Picture 1: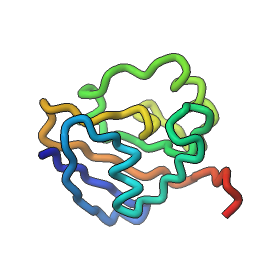
Picture 2: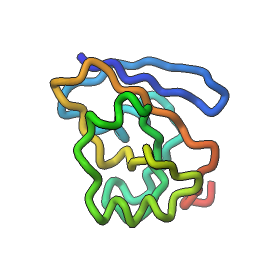
Picture 3: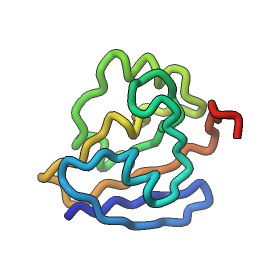
Picture 4: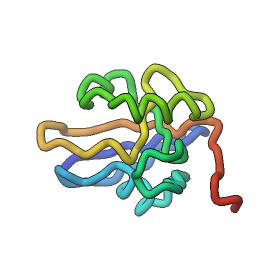
Length: 110
């Protein structure tokens, strides 16, 4: 079991449990987090942009060039920004802290 902490823009923290191999986008959406994921993980948008806590960022595999290109389009991107659709929980992790960005882009017009 891997504890995923979602930190909202107002500082509210929600904790949920995930399994190794679970995709962060799926966990976030199941928990009602405000991640649109318009392209369903195809790296054709940046609507699942999240900011990984600095202490956890080194746990992740490096972003591929395609992901970096999409992050260039994300509002409020930081050096610890990633796309939630490209993060799968790893059995070696105990936890992962994920911050929601202050700005988002709604691609579905809702």
